[in-house]
Length: 155
Image (cartoon, rainbow, N blue to C red):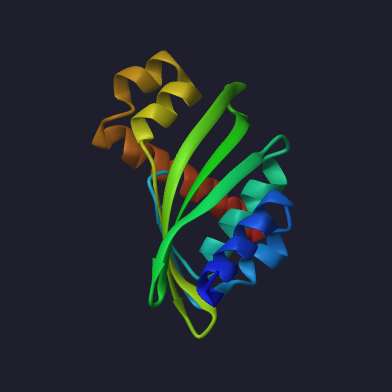
C-alpha cells in the first residue's frame, strides 16, 4: 500500500470508528469537497459536514475499499448504511470517491453517487418522481447547506 493509499485507508477507518476529529485531520486546510447531496464545500464547511454526519448518524455503518491510485490521487469505493432521519427510511448508498493528496493531506475529495437512487430510498414516491430533477438537487443543496450552517454556528 502506498502512503497515499494508507492515508485514505486511515480516513475511512476513522469514519468507521466514528472518529470525526481524526477523520478531518487528514484534510488540508484548503480542502475542497463535492458530492451530489451537499454540492461544493470548502475548508471548515467540509470538515463540519463530516462532524455533523457522524454526530447525527447514530446507526451509520461504513464499508470501503481502495480501488486505485496513481501519483497524487487515490480512488475508493464506499458504502453507507443508515436510517434517513427525516423519514425513518433505510438507506444503502454506494459511493465512488476520488481524492487528490498534496504534502500528506487531502486537498480535494469528490464523492459521486446516484442521487435518484438515494432519493428513492430516502423519500419514497417523492424521490422516485422528482429525485432525478435539477429542482430536487437545488432544493436538497439548499436544505443541506442550511443544516450545515446551523450545525457550524453551534460549534
